[in-house]
Length: 368
Image (cartoon, rainbow, N blue to C red; front, side, top):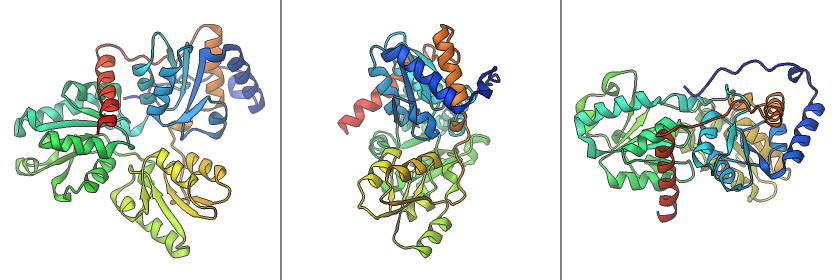
């Protein structure tokens, strides 16, 4: 599990005003200058994004941090696997800090590396080792990334999933995709793989709950995992929006279910969603299927357009939202004292293997 217990914050942090916390944070940023970098994922609270050096997706942020040669401290306002990614790609002795250790990822936790290894062994029994290409979404633990590297596989992002999955399907008979079944299914379907050749592997059942004939006929095996936030959107919600105002364009993240992606006008990564709406004509209308903090931010950044959530009752990503001003203030002041807390370290051999899989993905994304 990537979620670790976070000790309650000591006083005075829970009692500080927003103005006090912002002032304290800014003082430390000025004091440390280039020696301190604050990264904010797209889904972070507005006040966290406001105080960060850069916002982006997990890979962009990790790459940015690695390029900061003068930085001694990287404070990652995201979730656990993202901070791990930053530690894997970092240069030198940078210290990676996660302000709240409880900021995990439900999806990443659905694919435990030991469970995946056991499933892989069961699959080998039936189809042989050289028949399986493991691919993990970047939203996964460092241990799973390392396992994939050991087996000759690769990592993908929502931006390059189409290229990576296409390559994997040409390399071996069966693609085993972790941990998000929806990104895997949506990508495979777009590549023309028939749904009857796409199967779900249930890790709680022997051989994934499948018989040998089903497994042998499978082209894409999907781990039974998902993003709870993106599962809150439905085709019915889309139909309701279009019935009320057909001018709305629907844009959804590929972590949404196949039914939602099929009904959407556009589907793509977080950056794709941001860029598509930003570049759309003035007065255009958009219903967006992704995390609410980002939807609200897009709406604010595009005041000449109408931007709403596909789900009118959408909630925030609970684990991502654990990063708040009190935790950020505390984390930065511990760094200032010379006693940094919540340091995220990926140890060997996992670190080298996971790095190998990430570098392979980056190189292949350029070639493909």
